[in-house]
Length: 271
Image (cartoon, rainbow, N blue to C red; front, top):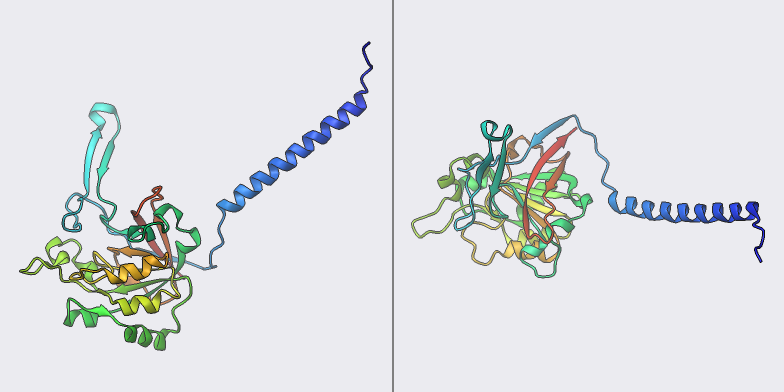
């Protein structure tokens, strides 16, 4: 025997189910949106400075590493457009070291939080000391003297050492600065300076091939920063144009899944 259908009851039940489904979907979308949106420190800006070294076939790279090479695959006369293939190592050019670079199990490059990639950038000018000693290592005293003039290093900031080495970037031999014993001679952070900074910063940066000085065999400053799940930026450009404080850095690092390092377009925004 067929039973009559109560249309009003069925309609109400259907609407209730649809509303429940819509609410569930809205909650899922809201959660996904919340994961995609990260809070950053407020800032104002009216000017910008590019802190990235342009990439080209003749650019300097870490000795024994993989140089940058651009290979044309399609050109206007053959395909009506241009298409290139890039070959390079993770650490070629202006790039970011992820904690995974030295510390197994730490964060890879694609897991660096966005709020740590859009942040205050502060600069310590060490060019006077470096001019007297190519192997100069930044000291805790340098940092404390900087703080006496500019205030405490801001929490969740990028602390950059301006060595002046960025002016040598287009002269690979001078930038690498290899001595007669095949030892690189360029400045960097001392392990003591890294230990002092690691408590406050999201990362540190420099305008040389490494945050450790060129002759280092232990990369001790690397270990201090990366073990704490902090990151590093190397081969930065145009640091002379930055103020000591007051700028905001935007680090557009390539989110390579599981990557230990990756290239980045980095620029600073100034009030």
